[in-house]
Amino acid sequence: AQTVTQSQPEMSVQEAETVTLSCTYDTSESDYYLFWYKQPPSRQMILVIRQEAYKQQNATENRFSVNFQKAAKSFSLKISDSQLGDAAMYFCAYRSNDMRFGAGTRLTVKP
Amino acid sequence: NAGVTQTPKFQVLKTGQSMTLQCAQDMNHEYMSWYRQDPGMGLRLIHYSVGAGITDQGEVPNGYNVSRSTTEDFPLRLLSAAPSQTSVYFCASGQGASEKLFFGSGTQLSVL
Image (cartoon, rainbow over all chains, first blue to last red; front, side):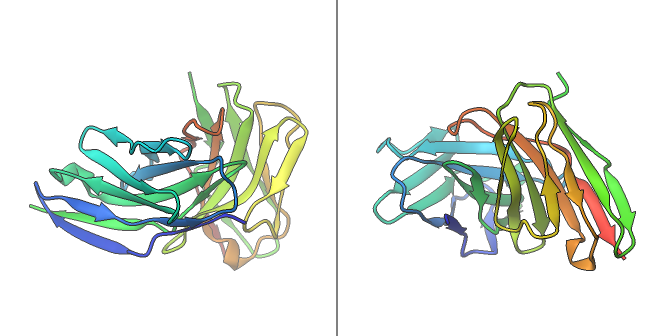
């Protein structure tokens, strides 16, 4: 079964600085998709960014980018120019037939 | 467009009671799933379905049943509630594997 591991339960960043959240996964499949979701206190799940495993180019969405290392099964999220509104739980997710999530990283942004 | 509608939003049960969490989507998504969210454990997949008449187990299926008689509806049944099932439950739906999931607003369930 596929597993997703987020080894950082909590992270903190200064406003306007850059932070990287780690994610690793375990799979024997070659075709899959990876996602980062943000969950603010409202409990709403918000898609931040997605990556297709067959694409070598790292995905980018404005201040959010990923470092996808397929051989290492690593999928980290970089948030640049951190803003107070970025404070939330961040979940890494793997999808092939179903979607599995990591345990999450709680990001605090200090003013 | 309502998206994913999940009811109820809150529920308190006594140990041993049964209940059904309702989930409906109006986006004609083939994929639907149920997750439970517990502190420090992220979202864990309970059951999922890739189309009407097809269901499969996720990571933590014990104590839960599902059925998918229509594309729109995917109810989750708790057969005999236990305190360990106290959690926040999310229903989600999606189209292809490359697409994001759409989530319901969640159900806060407490089992006493």
